Image: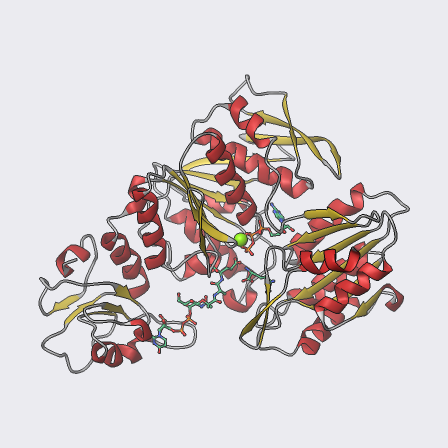
Length: 490
Ligand SMILES: CC(=O)N[C@H]1[C@@H](OP(=O)(O)OP(=O)(O)OC[C@H]2O[C@@H](n3ccc(=O)[nH]c3=O)[C@H](O)[C@@H]2O)O[C@H](CO)[C@@H](O)[C@@H]1O[C@H](C)C(=O)N[C@@H](C)C(=O)N[C@H](CCC(=O)O)C(=O)O
Ligand SMILES: Nc1ncnc2c1ncn2[C@@H]1O[C@H](COP(=O)(O)OP(=O)(O)OP(=O)(O)O)[C@@H](O)[C@H]1O
Ligand SMILES: N[C@H](CCC[C@H](N)C(=O)O)C(=O)O
Ligand SMILES: [Mg+2]
């Protein structure tokens, strides 16, 4: 594509060089530059991409997009100076791929917990409703039924626009994507045209990256600030920050709740280990009031997730009865409250709870459903090189709700597993030490839980959900909580 085309609607500060040059690909990592590529210099958390401009030119870059021009400009290179390269990257990537988001009904879901669950159920629902659907999520990305691996919850702008363009080509009409707070701050979603934005909730996570909780809230709000008036902003009114997201938001304001009057409301009529009976109400729709649906998912938090899905589908003008019928057939999401009962009657649950709030929700759900004679054994660890302050909180919650807890490793990354567990133990100083133990190796910890469990007991293995690896010192080893549980119990 010619540089001049690439620059459409992009605010530039200065332009130096030829604009009629063809560009092969857009890169923001000098290590990936090939002949005739464009290099966009980003300021990162570790490095400043401006340092690598010279390297990028040596490796074949023809266009440099930067905030600060190099002292010497080379005559055969085109330089574009912009105020914010991260912002420019989104626009350039959109132009490069023909702004695919304009041709799709793109819904973005943000929030600390529930993003993957909501987008995955939306994907499944809209498929059942007969559409060609795209999915962008932590677990994987999907175009119709084809799976593409995902490296991030929200891909970088180039990858993102490439995926969306492929979705357009494959005639997708709807796309459901997760919008992480990192992606908002790093402007990975810049230039996208959203039909709707959803806020699930906000609780403690990622303070290593955002600094303070207020900054984390501000990051999430950044998504709602960019929604256009033609879109909708659907927020959880029961979350203290739900309405904050709507302040100065141009999109149509829509709320959902379990507790108070809002546009969409849900009530749990009945629940067991097998599922829940839900009743949904809609403020301006008499037709729906009192209608019930059975779901195979359980837990308060899943009632919220299903209500969110219902509301999005209604806002996209689907038929309420069809939505409710199809929702009752949906089994759940890989690695989210995934249940399995052994031949000897031990119940196991694998869940991706890796925040204090998620862990508490899952444990609360189990405690509410379990009978007094059933013991609850929790195996949990915390990730390395991530928010340390959630470690003691997660250990405390596990110990408070469980009859027995085993603290172990999650993905230690480059941290020492022992040090991570030590941080966790800070949270259980006041807890009777006969209620927990520590076992560094996750496999051993799960095996120990299995050997302790009697018939009817419940084992929760939290933190890794769908993950099929354990990351230790930059290396990923095969590891699947569900496989270890089955091997140990059968
Ligand atoms: C903290 C964070 O989000 N980091 C992301 C960020 O990297 P960075 O800022 O550290 O990059 P950097 O190393 O400082 O380099 C700055 C720039 O120079 C470039 N560079 C660097 C070296 C070189 O030789 N040449 C070169 O051109 C880099 O490509 C980059 O453009 O930009 C990179 C490119 O987009 C991302 O891959 C990287 O994600 C890292 C791997 C990561 O782990 N991110 C996680 C925390 C994340 O984003 N998670 C959220 C989910 C959170 C949730 O669950 O809610 C997600 O969306 O996945
Ligand atoms: N609506 C919700 N409110 C609170 N907790 C939830 C909710 N939905 C799911 N959870 C819990 O959070 C865990 C993670 O859920 P999910 O993967 O859907 O969230 P996510 O926002 O995509 O997380 P990530 O930031 O890692 O991508 C689940 O395994 C469950 O324990
Ligand atoms: N999306 C989460 C994943 C954490 C999963 C957990 N297993 C860990 O490794 O800490 C994050 O980037 O913080
Ligand atoms: Mg996710």
